[in-house]
Length: 185
Image (cartoon, rainbow, N blue to C red; front, side, top):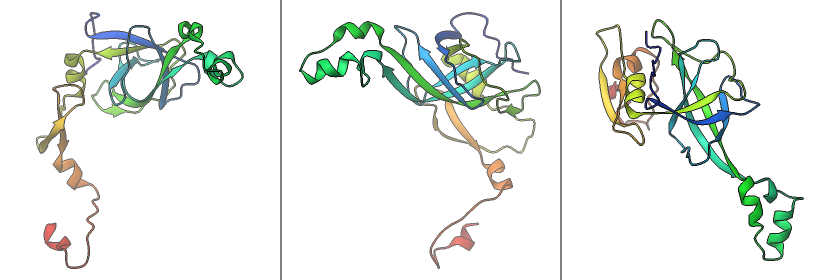
């Protein structure tokens, strides 16, 4: 079982905290000052019910928020007159939205999250080595046919697809008449 032991702070670095309103498949978190969350990068949270089991998330939106620059506040009024209300800059923070992808259970089976993270749950930025160990494909079957299709964004970790797993399920082959669909399969 990979309980994703991250014993030292170099493996997983805190980057933010979960906000209220998270669900089992959506994580919103505030990014710590001097830290940066990036779109399409992977981050982890600890499973709320299974200590030391880490759950993979992927950020899909990062947006700054300044409470002085919303309608009805002083910021837009100052901007209307051509002034910058920079005093509100100290109140600014960054919110990241991430999809909660899942985790490996004790038997190394991929599972979706069953519960929502709690407010103030820590969000971690993984080291490349931690992410590599988490994503490394481990199959019990010897009939896997892995094909490297590129690298995980922002890393040197290869990305693979299992061609046998694809062929076992349903597949859709589309094409115009006489384009060779039958001879393709």
